[in-house]
Image 1 (tube, rainbow over the protein chains, first blue to last red):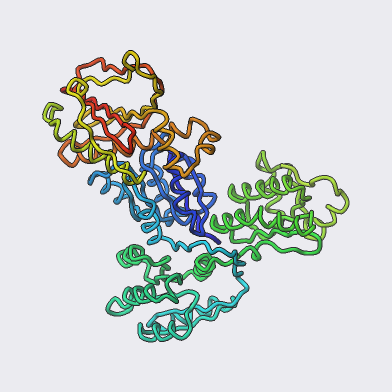
Image 2: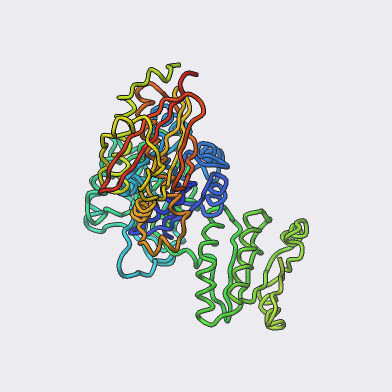
Length: 384
Length: 176
């Protein structure tokens, strides 16, 4: 998936300037005009970077930043302040709340790109559109870690993927490996002796073959200084120990810009099936939401006019899921696609408790849902 | 709290020159040079055209600042120049600007004013007069004057950028 950059500024001029600055890079620009809208967009779309103005009506940048940092789902999103207020006290105040960097207006577009490029990977747009690699395509990952157990843990945790995980324990071995077989992604322990990780990072970045290779830092959760240093220096992201392998897998897929849509969308027979997984974090919901319209449009283009929304794996309903389902139904209507839903007893029961969802109809199985659409070809079977 | 009388005209002039110059150079890629206004105009410039002069529509951005110094800055551009500046900042052609509407010009000049006054304010803050900015507003018209009610210190400065004029009208409140 492309990087998403959210620009939050009450000035449309600044938002246009930001959009213009990034137009040569492969990223999606989202916009919001104040802190309230900014929080809503951030929750829905989980951007990779937020460019945040300070002085705004409704909710200013400082308040929005404070709310971001107190939300467990959003606090990890890096924020860069864009401000006309460059005074020392002011900068210290916002630095204390936790910004990755700041720019004082007026600013040159080149400076914005340079600073953003230190926080997220900015890939120039290529002239010929290339098909995105999918999560089913092989990839080479290099882990630089002097603790064999950690390498083993990563290999074991990702063995269900088509990725080949190579482990090395020293900076020298890592350089040799990268020279022979430039990996698609590098994970390096920040606790390697004599700051070897940071030296290695600089070498990786100066090598033309690995200049754009995503590099993850790996460190114990409590080592906040090392994490900060890695972020400042420009590591793609930091993964903390103990490792949550499913989170690591998601970060790897995102960093390598893999097309993960096949996790959630498949064409079966004459329809598109959208499966919402049991683990439905905001990141997963944002991912599904991003692919929704393009995948439905692709299905329609291929001659499929039916869709099944399958939520039977969900253990319970929450607002994020309700919004996603509403978006899915709305998109189906816009594209003239018939749809039906598959659920479970718990979901059906919880839907009855909400005004907006109580009339929703769920089927027990995929076959029942498909059959229901054959019976009533002209109408949508679930209403919202 | 330092009284406004302690802020010298030199400090004001240096900071507004630097601010206008920086903003024009950074955002528009062109210089904006301070001109010498006639002595009479230094304390009382007006947008009201003199007899026989053509009436030109003006777009005026204004931002206030509050703190150890309280005041307002009005940033005057004539409409054709405001349009030119907007097109350059937003990468638009004239036709695109026409289609987008006047709101876009207001927003662009508002932001330009915000950046200029912000830069000015940062300079005087560093010189020992900390203050914060208010939100920018836009005035438009062709035959009007702005007169403060209370006693103020008032300074007009004229800048030229590629043959076009920019006037800054700085009003500082005297005393507490």
